[in-house]
Length: 307
Image 1 (cartoon, helix red, strand yellow):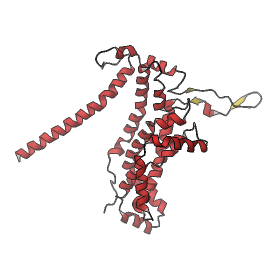
Image 2 (cartoon, helix red, strand yellow):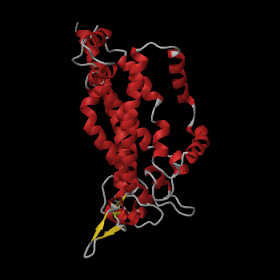
Image 3 (cartoon, rainbow, N blue to C red):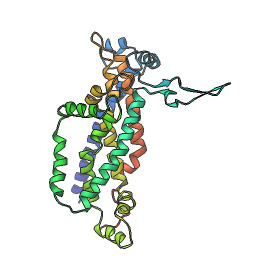
Image 4 (cartoon, helix red, strand yellow):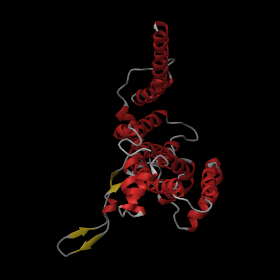
């Protein structure tokens, strides 16, 4: 008994040591990015060893980043130019020009809209594949999964031509719609919704619930943790999307990855500005995880009826 307890203690120690090592390997690069964003470019490029103490040049680097003409990272107050003449005074009505979005606001808007739309479509498709029987169900599901192996480089030209024909070039919908029904999201929601007891759905049908009510009153509430986990995955996918936004969007509507790419010039790489931009791009992801961490770690079907 004592030998078994000692073995369990050793395994527990090794497990925690492995988790701690993984946390260090993950957090140290992020911390160094933050430190580098607070230093002058010459300070961390000329140093022979990584500097771990923050400096005082973050706002100077940020001002240099905002002063760039080819890309705007953080939005600024705009100017309304459309007015209604009422004689002694004017009323402006083009409120959408009151705030000019930068790359961060553009990424938050695109990733947020994409996440909400994709969660709806993926959960509906997952519910259909998990709880309904229809012709060619398995071949259609496997065909959807097969699209995961297609590299984005293969899809750029066909998607660009399609978006051009739809008149969506230089439009945020061009990078939202193509991946709205995310195959990975459909797979994850289908796997989780298979755990919903059929008896629970049948009893609701006997009580007069419609099929749509089964979806949004029974299926979705029991999938809160799964939806939270999937929302983080979908948000990160759209947040990090680079190649297609680079092709379809023009200057002024760049998202974060494309905007950071503009800091790599033909003759110089602006490392200090890149570090500031990278630091700012981490903040929304960190906030999202903090907001959803409770649902993320909670039980998938806690409180529901189980067979």
